[in-house]
Image (tube, rainbow, N blue to C red; front, side):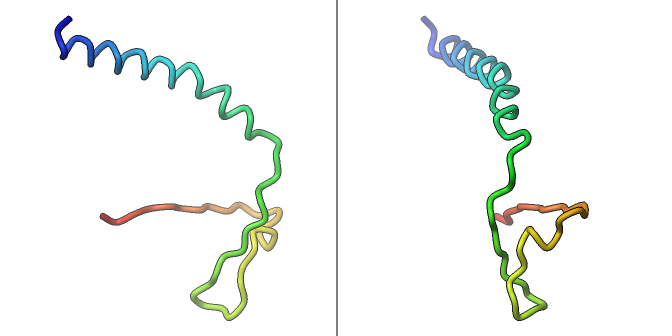
Length: 66
């Protein structure tokens, strides 16, 4: 079999598996509490906990600059 064709088939199977498994993985995180996390703050001397934001909308952005 042509190596390019084998690679294409492998990627197609891998992609289909990821798409079909994604809802099951996402479902396992629903209705579960967040882990206890404390974050260091640049503006305060004390650490900030996720519990400090209970009842408020919170956006957490993870990014990397390469």
